Image (cartoon, rainbow over all chains, first blue to last red; front, side):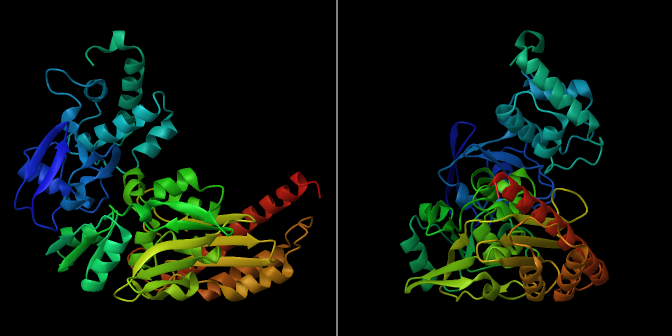
Length: 162
Length: 290
C-alpha cells in the first residue's frame, strides 16, 4: 500500500508498504529518518517516541496506514549538530547521554513536557518520562538535563541558539 | 493482508460484516505488538481511528456513553468527575505515550484479564455496547468477559461504546505492579459505592481467567455499611470484605506473580479501597450538612 505522511513539515510518500508495518519501520527504513530508535517494538521503551498529529506516541505501535494523511514530527526536527535544540544541548552538558539509544525518545518526550509545562518539578519530569527506558544513566542526569533546558529556555539569552 | 480504514461507523460495520475475521485496531497497543512479533497475521486489519463517532463521549440518562475510541489520556483529563474509578485506573495505564493512543474500547476488545479498565467498569455496573450492521445491543460488563481474551461480541460486531453510570458515590482503584508505570497488573481491584441504591460494586483484575465481580463481598458491604454515613467503618466488616474479595478470585501462578500472592494482595487492596472510599463518603456527608 502507499502511505503519504507529512513528516517534519514535508510531505513524504512511501510505496509498497506492508499493511501490517509500523510507522517506525516506515520512518527508519523507507523515509531515511533513523533518529527514532527501534528497540522493544512493544511500546515499553519509548525509544521511538514521535508526535502524531501533535500527540506523543510510540511509532512502533502505529500501523503505517493509520498515519496516512497525518502529521508526524520526529526527533530530527528538533535540531542538528550545527544548531542543537536547548534540550539536546542540555542533555550533552548534563551528561544525560551515555550509549544514546534512548536519547531521541527522551528528547521528544521531554520536548512535549516543556511545551505543556515550562518549569516542571522533578515529579512532573519523572511522570512525563515514565514511558522512556534508559539502561545507562540511572535517570538522575536526564532529570538534571530537563531542568537545565527549562532554565535556559526560560532565559534564552543564556541558552544560545534556539 | 488488507488494510481497511473506514471513515464512518456505518462503513466500519459494513466492513466487519463483510470481513468477519478482520482484526479491529485503534491505539495499536495490543494489536501492533502481535504484528511486530509475528504472533498474528490477520487477513484484514480494520483501522477504526478515523471513525469520528467512536471518539466522542456524552452524558445520556445518568450514564456516560463513552465511545470506544476515547483514549485513556482523555478519560483522565475529561472524565475524572463523572467516572472517577475509570479515570483512576486510566491514570495507571502504561505511560503517557500509551495513554495517548490506547482506548477503553481497545481494552474491551482485547478482553485481557489484566486490562486496567475492566475492574472499574465492573464496579460501576457498566454495559458494553456492541454494534453490527444489523443493530445495536448492550451487554452488562459482568457478562461481557467470557474467557481469557474472549468476550461476548459476535464476529460481525464491534465494541462501539461503553455505558457507565455517572458516579453517585466514592470510587476507588488499586493496582499492584513492579513499578508505577508500564506495568501489566499483577492484581487489581476496583470499588464503587452506589449510595442511592445502597449497593456496592467491585471488580477484580488479573486474578481469574476473566475480570470478575466479587458478589458475596458486595452483598456483605451493602448490608453492613451505615449508608447514612455517620458511622465509622467497623474493622471486622473491612476484614471480612477483604476475605470475601480474595475468595472470589481464581488466580494462577505466572511470570508476574503467584496465585497465593495475588489472593493476599486482593484482600489488602480491597480493605484499603474500602477505607479510602468510606472516608470520602463520610466527608461527603459532613460537607452535605447531614
